[in-house]
Length: 480
Figure (cartoon, one colour):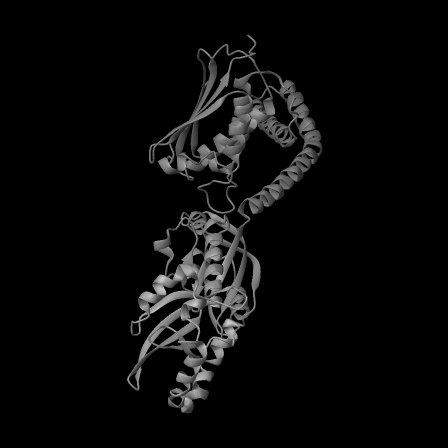
């Protein structure tokens, strides 16, 4: 049948649809009416606009279906109501993604197929964008979470799980306040909620807590997720971990404090040193001129206490000075004693008994003595803290083996768990309360000893105390 004859034949049935023409053209879907041979008998205005052609009447439906999609399309052509995805070719030869449903229409002893197609181009693009977006979120190193409109978590990426220490199963359905450190006031969070519920983005710094209690400092951006009706349906929280930056800032402040203490100690040494010298001289003069045994005994006590004060000030001044980084021949036993004298001045050591066993005839090592002093002070302070203010003992022993000088510091404290023992030399790792430890002492100590070519070993079990062994190689050692 020619196209002209087909048009004449179709005119005889067009009156069936005349009263539905306006509804037909107002439909947002693309609608094609096909005869038994799959020829387009009619199509609506939406189809003409989206296909970009107005000459489709009398054309085969397959003429606007890409060749690769035709077999599937033909298999559904005689179905009634099954939906499938396909494509149409536009006048510019571009592919239009569509979701198709075919209905069978019986009329005047003829059967027509009504093809109803919904334009899925934007949906496909949204799906593609979502796929790209989800891939980026899944693979980014920044922790990201998504909550519903009530603030309950419905998604978090792997980086968020690693960062927080919680698994996805532990977080889904929970409120993000699970991670709160309680460092921020109620007014702070009220302001955050007012901002994001108003459809605006909030950005600021927040301190949270990992599952293990470690601090998490983050630069947080919370963006409302808004639907097509301008309603807030959820929130996306993107974190940038600045924990290390914050810790470094705190360490800088602490370093500046130590610098101030050094300046103060030098001033104290000057202001107190002169009167102490005078007191010591007077005590010695009186000791030589008196024959009273009671007076001599008390004067000797005064002399010893004056000497103790002088040593304390001298040690503080020496310790607070910046490292000279000068390698020189060093007596390890003397360095240990200097560190022990400084730690003994702390108020926490009053009920602690120190046991010293110093090896004899240890060779002198070519190292930086003030750095090694810092190592022993850090380890001794940790040993004191491990006793948690309770009576106990700390044993210090130096000895010589084949290749090293070994310094062992053992305490009768709480011990270290296997999990913590693997991380104690990591920077910023600490089991102490906030503000009572930076988590840098052992890390710095480990670095110093490694620079000397040595090593630090740890032996510990919970409840049995801990032993830190510092191994210093004999390479370059000098016999005393």
